[in-house]
Length: 542
Image 1 (spheres, rainbow, N blue to C red):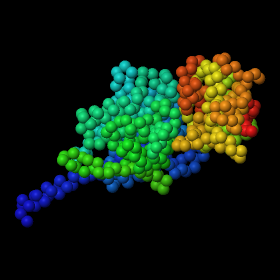
Image 2 (image 1 turned 45 degrees about the horizontal axis):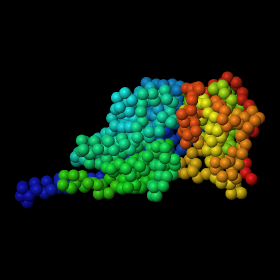
Image 3 (image 1 turned 180 degrees about the horizontal axis):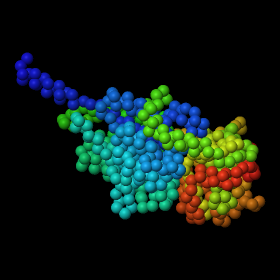
Image 4 (image 1 turned 120 degrees about the vertical axis):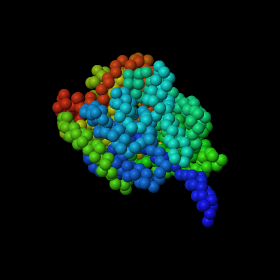
């Protein structure tokens, strides 16, 4: 074989080597501080955690050289460890960011819960990160530019492939977050923002592939396009797929859903659940044609970490703060005289009970008002044992909510009660069931409120919207036109959960202290709490 022939063969092989390639995109989302596999309520081992996800990331990197690793938001808040760092013992470095740095994330998207601990925590976490936080639609009101820096990243590969990853965040944050925390920040519509920046990615940056990482979910059924919730703008993933041209892959989150290998209008979509139960994996196969990379096929799947080993490197990063968190969690706050435990979740939600009455009493005491509402957030709460520790408090009140007192009319209270009453399915004459709209596609038990300070009955034999058959205040029917001051958490006070009757109402008092701290202080100051029930409400049926 001649030298020229050998050279030609080698050159041909070199061309073939770059004609086709496989790109892998890995997505985590809604991790909510779950670093290690542990249930803080009882310290039992769990099947989830970033330390287990890390083994999947390591495996992918060992078998694929073209990888992008993205976190889609809601990483910094959600466990006692994150609360302890933010509220009790703030150290020089956020351990969550230390973990993300170790795993070499390429970028992270700002989630709505990133704001929960305030801008100081968020800004210091961003500064500590070895990767950019991207969100193109969260703007500085003064400059109209992305407030956290980059709206997107460009990932370049040796074979010339250029991948653009655009970050977007649900625009609904002002409806949940305390206004003082997000002062000076605007949250723009994600569809309009995507149209603008994808144009830039295509025309100016000359990317070959567009990936959108959106901390938001789907507002419509992926197959039929029919609305699955009120179209408030909280979730616009379906709209992004339909209205915005040029998206190849859409990474989503926020709804805690497990979605894999689905397509909407030709866009490959993915959502990897929550609490580090799984990591989303996208595989895109490309081929060079006329010096342009073309997508041959694309697919996605969820890789669950249930059977993976927890990586000791991650455990070591959080070891010190984990130990301190555990000591703090076991600190006794006081005693309960009586029964304040949870045995039956439906029973808790169908008649007045000691746990919910206690939470409402804490809220009323903190706000100095006599009407309050709260919710049993999920079906994991165990209630308070006879000796209450911080572990019990943060396990039962899982969100870093603060309180607001808003001034509303009696008619608003009735409308809110009817909204809560829709939590129950139409009574079939046999058993009380939950309306599927509160369980599918995402459990929303936190959107069923229970009130103290008023007397009411919910009759689930009646049609939705006409179920409040009794509504009294201090022994007389509630005046529909009169104004009342009501305390509730900041999420609900802003209209969160589609409680639009509360949105925009006058804020009489803002109590910027986390509820878990208010509960702890209430118990500490009294020593012993009586598990009282005044029976002011119940669910009935004909």
